[in-house]
Image (cartoon, rainbow, N blue to C red; front, side, top):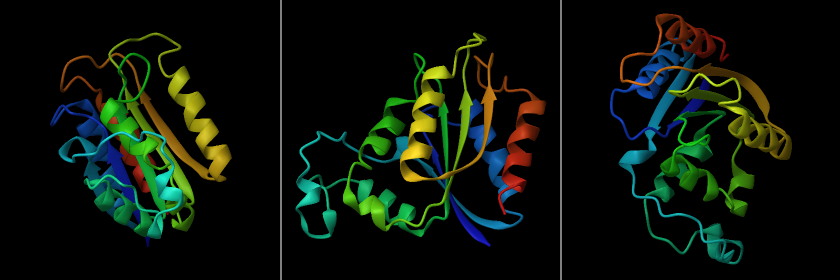
Length: 178
């Protein structure tokens, strides 16, 4: 049984991202322990690139915020799922702050081996996810992570408009996490 951490970046409660996350989690819980962190519920300041974490004891950031709780959950995870609405062809700012705060040697102590992606956007453009997928692939390559899979949903503008087929895809992706 693995430990999966879902980092959900949607500030919209019970919106399309949350629905996809819930569906994924339901499938994943069949064979795994699943923890969901809605990063918008945490106070996390952005990284300023000062690199003080490289010299501080335990590689701790000088910021005293909720990222310490996220680091703790990351240290326990075998796999991470990144879930976000698409905002101007990128992930949400709240989720980006969390990802940027992984610019710390502390990340080298994590035993994460797999990464997955759930994205939902209002537009239906073929290239809607391209910039996020490029960054995702670079992260997979840099950290030598296995791609657990992706659920990419276009055309879901209003809350509750994510299709049942897409929810089923998220559920199946969760089930595949063994």
